[in-house]
Image (cartoon, rainbow, N blue to C red; front, side, top):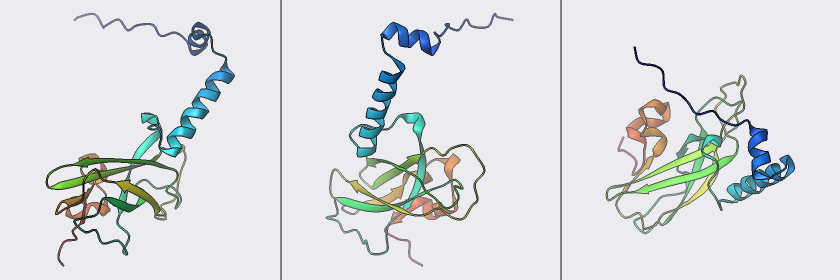
Length: 163
């Protein structure tokens, strides 16, 4: 039986802080600045601080081929006591036949939550090119591990399937 791999020894956080010459206060200030800029959309949020959410188009929005900006209504997938929480932006993947919009919300705090159905929060999503005849697809529905009841029709949000 081969020997297990040797993992590198990681320095404890205080040793790293000392080596960098930063105080804890300076680290907190840097993180606060980063978090503030991430909220404004200037920098992306830290990858471990967000989770995929689902979205719908508001009833009053009917995209046209010229549409180059969408307003989507975002809702957390997990139970969270009726609250979606803080929006963390969207990732847009534009293809020849579809536009996949994946929305994100802040990770929820540990705990037990009721499943009331979370509120909807508006998020403006710019497109690089006009929508044209492409489908709009909810990115939360493209991952088999994140299938929800909202992913009927493979998450296509527009054009709506005929009844």
